[in-house]
Image 1 (cartoon, rainbow, N blue to C red):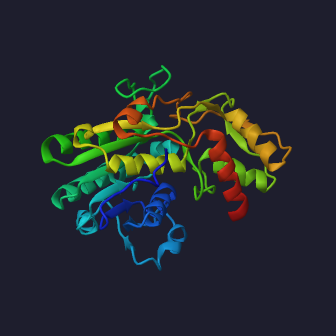
Image 2 (tube, rainbow, N blue to C red):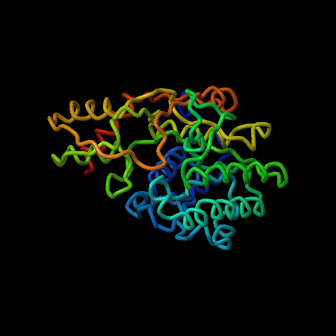
Length: 324
C-alpha cells in the first residue's frame, strides 16, 4: 500500500504543472521526499507561492512561473523531463458555467499544449488530472469507466476533451498518457477561502471561526471523498504503469460514499462546535451522488489506497487546526 516504496531511476526529473496548487504542491513534496528532482510550473493564478516556499532551498527543486496556455513555456518546462504530472487546470463547476471561454482555453488548449510539448521533448509518461464530473447524469453507482452520461458543466466538458486528446496522443504520437478521474479530493493545503472553496476545508474554516456554514441542497448528496495521499499514490503508480495501459482514464478514489450532512455533523463533533447549518439552493451542474468503482486502477495501475475517509479527515482536521 502507499507509494513510498516505489523506485524510479535515480536521475528522474518530474514536472508538476499547477505545482503551487493544492494537489500539485503535495505531489512536489512527496517526490522531493522520495529523493527525486522536481520542476514546478505554475502561473500562480489559483496556486500560491506560499505552498511551495518550503522547497526553495532544496537543490532538487526548480520553479518556473509560467502559463500552460503558452506553448513556448510548455516546451521549456518539459525539456529533459521524464514524467509529467499535469495538474494545471481551473476547478469549480459553478465558476466554469460563468467562464466557459476561459475554461476552454485553460483546461483544454493548455493541456493540449502540455501534451504536444511532452511529445516533442520525449517525455516518458504524461499523467493528467481528469475528474469524476465526466460521468455527468449517468445515474448508476458505483461510477465505472466506460459508462458515462451527458455532461452537466463546461468544467466536465473540458475534462472529457482532455481524455479524448490524450487517447489521440497515445494512439498517434507514442506519448503514454494516463487520465486520473479524481473524486472530491481533500487534505492539507486545500484552500478554504473564496466562493468556490471545496466543502470540507470551507466547513472546517467556518466552524473554527464560529460561523454558520451553508449546505447547498438538502445535505443528502453523497460523494466519494478522497484523501490527498491516495491521489499522490495514483499519480506515482501511473508513472510506472506499463505502456499497454496508456491512453486510458482511471477512477481515483477510496471507493466509499459519504453524505454531506453526515460529514458536517462529524466535523462539528470533532471540532467541539454546536452550530446548526443553513441550507441553500442546489448548485448548478452538480451531480447528486458520486461513488467510484476503483477496480480498474487497482488491476492496471496497482493502485491500493491506504487512507479511508475517516483516517484522511482526522489528518486534515489536525492540519487545519494548526495552520488556519
